[in-house]
Length: 424
Image (cartoon, rainbow, N blue to C red; front, side, top):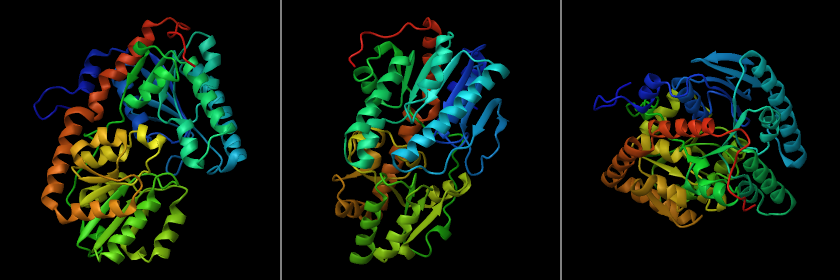
């Protein structure tokens, strides 16, 4: 597809040049099915466009129950997982089952298709155990660093201790096994260099940019507003660490204390969804909050197209401060101004497309959302800035060359040759 100036996209150039022709890649992702995991699916399609053969191992999920299918030339092998785990024993069982299926299916892929590279997408930091037998046989191992699990553990449970140290150990072992590392932002790159001891030339920043050819901006739909004057949108996981309880408290202030005529539309599924619905009812704002659950892309795009402003309520903690949130980039792709707490990577991504509330301060979050709703011209200008930033710097097409460069670096390295001296 051509850009608006009729120049070929980077993906078009990859299709033409075929820089990875002859490469055979096995991608393992444990927490989401394909093609639902957008980042990994973008990687799959990019590697295919560049000439590589690609197979993927991932879990099943709602709407993705088939144990095997081929989509756009990508071979997808899925396996079941236990229901949402909780507690140490639950997570141990989930990881053990996942590792069993990943190893079983990796052997199957090796026999059916063959592969020269194992591309592991965390969480958790255990997939290196599946890669090790193949690495010993001469295959290369690429670590695609999606989540910083020690910080995630601390954010989720509010403490360190034995399991936190265990997360650090698994992370360290994954880095030590990796021939090349892909980081989702500069903060994760610093972790690869410092905690991981990876040489700078072996770390590549590939951001989770939206595919602007896939996202469809549509005319606003009045049904989402339920007759309200304003609408605030949220898209993302409904989990305990996403700060949605803070958003509901801010919504209560706006609706009950300030009389704001606003509808909040929250798109996504997750383990905290039921509790959040109950919380909205307890706060007396259930009629002003729509929980859609997980919806098809068309509905998600409709919500984002219809919202006046969007919100990212992720708490300020070490995990969120260093992580790039996909929803922030999606809001920008739809030209929406947003409000979020002041997080390092959130501010890097959004810049002037966002207002920044004080850390975990629900009153300030409410005030800034209200201000944006009351100043639509400024909100439009912020949205235009965000859209242009995605178009010019952050969309997936800007990540294509770096992903290919990571694979070319992998090819240039002899199996087993690694890094500078580890700082671990």
